[in-house]
Image 1 (cartoon, rainbow, N blue to C red):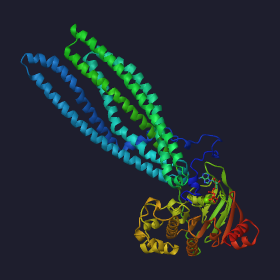
Image 2: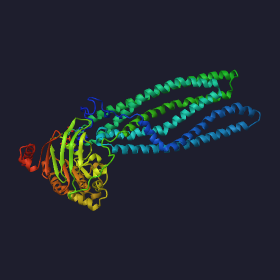
Image 3: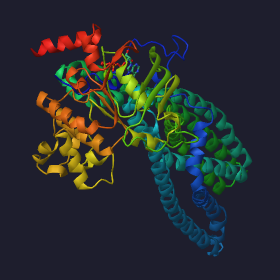
Image 4: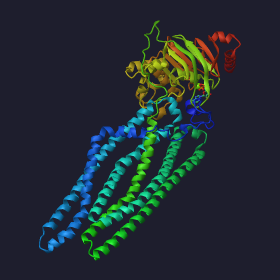
Length: 625
Ligand SMILES: Nc1ncnc2c1ncn2[C@@H]1O[C@H](COP(=O)(O)OP(=O)(O)OP(=O)(O)O)[C@@H](O)[C@H]1O
Ligand SMILES: [Mg+2]
């Protein structure tokens, strides 16, 4: 059996196709999580941008000033040419070399200055970029990590990856090339127009008149490109999501020979991205052709008219030469403006998506006024657990726990059994506060879980599940996660107590063996043993086991059971089990059906009766016989 994602409702529920509307939503209402981008609160994008750039304000200002001066140096060129033709050459004829030498020197200074300033600007801009992107990636990671399980079940990891890679990347493009481009384009537009108007009002006026059609062109391009780019970025996100999903579930994919079907699905998404990309490029091509047409018409008109005026003696040749040089420079950046608009569009779309993600608040928030747990009493490490009028529904489904009341005294071991989908895992997830109840309270020694600071809660309640996830690192580190300050002896003691020491000692580097690739090097049962050792070392008041022994063989399970006798002693424990063998160690058995407790009693008492548990127990006995 391939057990990678077996039974784990958390993994199984990635946007089920026919899901019911969330109770708090209007039936049939559209779930924002079906879309790639979460709704971004108004102003959030802008707020994000200012909060990113705010701390770098001074450097942004300096960089802009540098660019301004650099542009002035660049734009001085044609003016110097005009001066050389109209003043320098006549003076030269009169044997006055001064003006030409001055122009030459001026040209040299401006070129060198422009180069140096450009260098300075690029360096400054690169530094600003790096800082912004570093900050942004960090924020995305920290924020995503802090969001509740509820969020992650609906917002796939592929989308998160897409946020912190492609979206951050498109912002990088904008910041590193786009903004410089835009500033350059705007500055040169303004300065050249002013210069043209100053050189000759008529020619300047034609240039200004050509801005009308250009503006219309840019506007329509912007509108159309925005659509094309939004389509493109959604399409690429879909490609990444599919990729991540397939590779995360590679084992079931191969086991069920889903490769071909996946290839077909992927090809569809891949082609869609290609088409969207093509749409975007086509818009760009249209724009470039249109803008060149306008520019060339304007330049041709001005040159013709200017030549006529030079011939009739109303315009100096040098001024016309300078005007033509300026005109070329005026329209040159218009193609680049399209590039800028592109990077702007995709960066704006990306930034909005990132802002939407960062605006999500955890469904399981930290308490505003945290309370401490009372000191342990009764000489045992366990604490009392109480569910008071708890009702619970997942956001994407109907009510799972209709109204639930349960008290587990400190130190009691409770086994929860019941058919698949009865709500057992939901119950223990509420106890570990992966979710908050829709109504009612879950109390630990009388304190509402919602009032406990997260570190205290995580120390107090530890859950071992079937999935037994291992982090990259050594076995030792994996065991020590629950108590990083534990000594090597304590780690080994925990492993010995749970029966994991033997297999660990047999590994190539013993406790220092690296378990890279999700513990790929060790078996599922061994992973569970490591998870048990981790839980034992964490020394919690409440231990939750959700089918935590499902991957163990019978001797392994027996060993764990024996160990659990010691591990669980004095602790409060809730053990969800399909195998009745696990139930034998319990002080009390709860049988759950449809989110309700239908039987509650000591194992022996229930077995003696005629209820469901007695039936289950009989079936189990028979299967062993
Ligand atoms: N993340 C989720 N989102 C929406 N519905 C969920 C989610 N997890 C579980 N459910 C639903 O809640 C109900 C109870 O599920 P739960 O996982 O608690 O059952 P269970 O008793 O642990 O079952 P099993 O024995 O198969 O592990 C099921 O109907 C299931 O479809
Ligand atoms: Mg379950």
